[in-house]
Length: 391
Image (cartoon, rainbow, N blue to C red):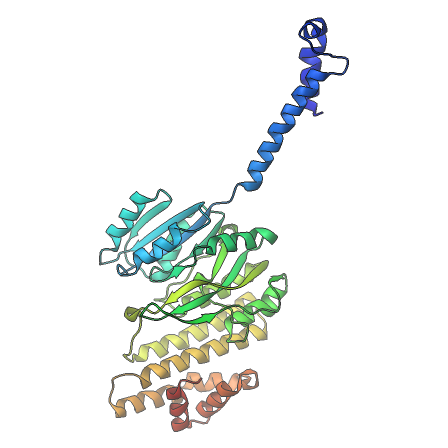
């Protein structure tokens, strides 16, 4: 019997024994007190059951810009989640099309939806605005031209609560412009839970560099503990300041991550958007690649990251260089201009210095051959490998 029922018994029941006996209660066995105690225990059990089944609020942030063709598909996949305790934040990033009106219409249809209208500042800052307005225990991000599996939140929330992790990571499907699934990338870690030193020795290096683990280095690839974001004051950088803003921002966040869980399953649908693709070469892209590399190496030094992480940064840099070279190869420039621009990047002092300082033995074979060809300025060989799209 609890202390409360014992206190009530001594105060109300025992001093008035004759009255309760007339009412048919046997106080010698304290039956009425036992009845009250049993009722109290039942109430406590009901409260405990409610607490066990009550699920935390999960925030879903959707930055919106110029995607009226895809917006309903995206929002439908979120509002119809099997996990229903959601806070859905639509951040209208000054979209010039019908998206602002569409967002407001959705908010009228579903009370879980909040809309924030702001001036256009880009994807990174739109996500930050979503973070500023979030109140959930966990938070995830969905790009408005993509969509998610209907059980994404349910599965990631369950994985997060199982071991109280900071981040839950999962894979994605590739969807072509016709809406057909054309690929699947799922995490393939050695195990599904990592903590402590394993975060910086295994998880982060494999996320930063291309590896067989297939880790999805994207803000859209995980469920995040909002407490982690609040305690660190972390925010994203802008893609207008640095390319691969997801990559760079997550590299910083992982310095403070204590544990991570993986789901070996694709739960996100990454869709090709023709408006986001460009076949026009811009030399300033490569200039941004150089800035990205220098800023990343400087941040590694600031955070005290290991050589393994710095090597992963170099690999990401080379991937960005290759992307710049590919944009030249597929551009509509004349052959002469294409060849001149191609050679200009390979001859660049910044690239040659990075190649000289790098340990190319850690690169996989095809990448190592290309890096060697760039280092020795074998232009024709580089051109053939880049155009073949096998690197």
